[in-house]
Amino acid sequence: MSISESQVQNALKEITDPNTGKDFITSKCARNIRIDGNDISLDIVLGYPSNSVQAGIQQLVADKLKSLPGAGNVTVNIGSRIVAHSAQRGVQLLPGIKNIIAVASGKGGVGKSTTAANLALALSAEGTRVGILDADIYGPSQPQMLGINARPESTDGKSMEPLEAHGIQAMSIGFLVDVDTPMVWRGPMVTGALEQLLRETRWKELDYLVIDLPPGTGDIQLTLSQKIPVTGAVIVTTPQDIALLDARKGLKMFEKVGIPILGIVENMSTHICSNCGHEEHIFGAGGGAAMCKDYNVDLLGSLPLDIRIREQSDGGKPTVIAEPDSRIAATYKEIARTVGIKLSQQALDHSSKFPNIVIQNT
Image (cartoon, one colour):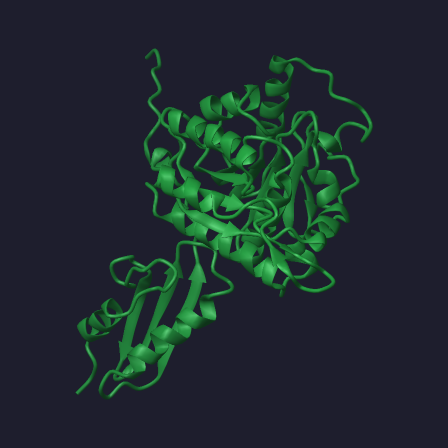
């Protein structure tokens, strides 16, 4: 007696993706189920960055299907497919960019740019096409963090080609001005520069664009919320009370403008002595978790105060690239995967499916 497709579907309903908590039929991840006698083959298409976890999920599905009575050979093909999700109301998505993730902090010095760089690199390491836009016009830091010392080229005289490093596309005002040139600009010039950097860069089919915002809640953040299609925001803080006060302001700003908060990253959560290994909460403990509880958002991950994170970022090879198999890199990849999962559960963008209405004189 041969195996039926309903048996396969029922089996797939009994197991869940450990990353999303949903079964493979309800989530529509199981596709192209094919049965040849008692041999079974299917595709598992995950909607989030998944390179690190694909092998485990593939084994989970294969083991379940092999346990069906009379099952023959089982072939499970697995991969990811990232789709565009809707942004704040009234703002259209940009061509060539499926999802935009804003990385923000209420104050400076909490490791926001380091987090943005490692998040972008982790999303790329997990198998997606990624870009990073350095929106800190006054103090751009991504050129040094990514080890890029070049000027963007223009093929048409109107737009710029993004520079590339470690497999991701990048754009920053720091690529266009000398490193020691101060940007003595008023707000309108700064916001105009941000829009130019975003819209006049020829991004190449990105699944995710990470925007490294300047600290605070000023002109750049307002422009971002009103004119740029942001799919979700990540708030970076430290456990210190003064940092949490400002992080709360940033979180509430995104709430007011209708941009979903994907979660909070707590930097410098503990310090581990490089000599003796002693671990200490020098900036306080539990601040990020308490803030998450107050605002009903998730703590995406906690990172230690570790000299290697600083050294690697300053040296142009952030931790995800410098030590891809380290515990810290694994934390960044877990944060990236969680961000991708949260975005995958948001409403899809259907704007491209609607026809344009054109009124003509006939």
